[in-house]
Amino acid sequence: MVFILGVNFHEQKLVKKALEKFYALGPQTSARILAKYCIHPRAKMGTLPPKTVTALTAELSTMTIENDAKRIVQDNIKRLRDMGTYRGRRHAMGLPVRGQQTRNQIATARKLNKVERRG
Amino acid sequence: MATPNCLRCLLVRPSVAARLPAARQMITAAAPFSTTANSRAAGGPQQGKGKKAPKPPVKGKQMNLSAFKKKRDVDKSKPPLPGERKAYRKRILLSNNNALPVPGLQDVNAESMLQTSNSGKVLSLPDAVVDQLRAVEAFKPTQCWGVFRKPSMLVRAETVELMQKMQKAADSQQALRLVVTGDRITGKSMLLLQAMTHAYLNDWVVINVPEAQELTTACTEYAPIPNNPTQYMQQNYVLKMIQAIRKANEKLFSRLTTVHQHPDLPQHVPVSSPLLQLANSAKEADGAWAVFHALWQELTTKGYGRPPILFALDGVAHIMKMSDYRSPAFEQIHSFDLALVRLFADCLGGNVQLPNGGAVLASTSRNNSPRTPSLELALLQREAEQNKTEVPKKDPFFRGYDERVDAVLKSVQVLRLDRVSKAEARAVMEYWAASGVLRATVDEATVSEKWTLGGNGVLGEMERAALLTMRL
Picture 1 (cartoon, rainbow over the protein chains, first blue to last red):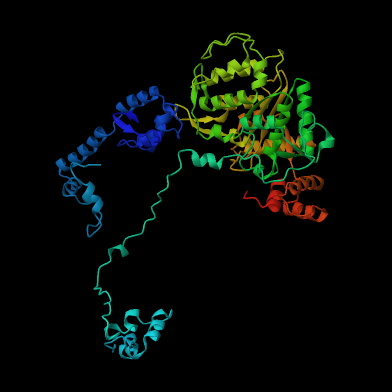
Picture 2: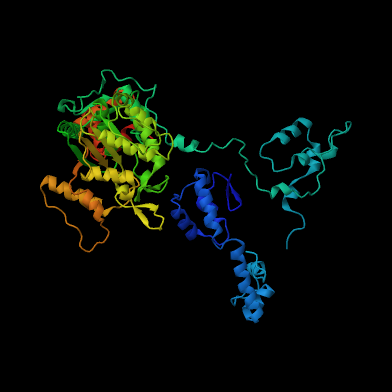
């Protein structure tokens, strides 16, 4: 088991995939982080030397990921709502924001379009 | 209008069934093609007036939930351990006790591949050399060694030509720089194996890269070299390689001693300690590159009884392009910036000399090889220069050429491996027949047939045509 930023990863997990577990850290960013620390793309967590693991944790702690990134999204939605825009209202109502029909198939909007958005 | 009763119900007449004798009823019950339900055909409760007949189980309409459930075949067996499948896929069998021993099969010796008289003969590998070749991974899983009793090989005209060139280069303390190319399954890797065999038999040191793609497809660890950050070392691969070299050349290494100081090594190796000790000092991946560097420096020292070196690499197209690795600035790393590949390229291009002579052999591969326009063009050009024909020119409108590759391949020799002659085909087929693998009389007609079926003498295709191996 390897700890990165307080999260426990299995040793057989690819480093790239482990990095992408963090919210707001996608394939592009993870590829760049790997290159920065000279980790080859097929490296597994178990093969990382402890020095690199701490370096990765330090690197991730400087980035806007997880709750910080989520809060930015929530703030943006809140701003829209406070201004009283149509998009803000639609978020508050949990309805599609971008002009989609609401006759059926709005499960994604119901799930995601909230002022306190989850993901 | 639909009938209120179904038509099949009309066919069932319990009153008729009741009148039949018991024996007859049993036959009806056992009849395989009756459309009537057994319980009904047996006559129901009327049967056997005195005795109490067992009642057929009354079954009401029940909901059968299991009918909607998918049946899952749960595999109770243990899954193979990590790496087990790959080990099975890559296993190399070198002998088969079911195959017949071939009478009169000679072992190859230090000179036998130099003699033109041996061209077109099948010779077997001595056990000691087999161990050495196995250590440096000269055998490939795709070659069908496992069909025969003892690993043996056909000495071809090209083999003799190459070995003579190698020996000549070693005698004159020069390096033979040569690329083996040719069509699919014509025996390019096999020729490299023969070169390694010759090298081991003549006490050379062999450094072998069995698959160049392992170095450049970003599947092994890399790190910038501490005092030279534009080059990258591949510590884990190099560690594996040092161990292979050490295992294959153990006797030689215990005889040779170091003549230089090596301050960068993880362990202190004093001057005039055996090379074996130097090779043994690579225990961790961290110091592996330093050890390899020191080892190379020792082996390429002039004099001191240093043997010639054979540096071989298979699948050369993979190192003639940008690698899949990325630098810390997220730029692609050229394969020549990987230190081990750089060393090979320098040797092949003649920038690094081998003062004790030897050979630098590269072989192209037709399996999973990337397109490398520079390599393809350079091979054609060098071949045309050798044959004194018109040299093909660069396409002026094409931008895919690589200058660094052009520079390396400016002065190499090219050996095109072609089809075998019918005499060679006959020799190898006689060997197959003597091993009991080919069950046919080897005469002119059979040889001609298999030779033609195998694309006019492509050795691998002939194997497929004649041996029907699973090599597809």
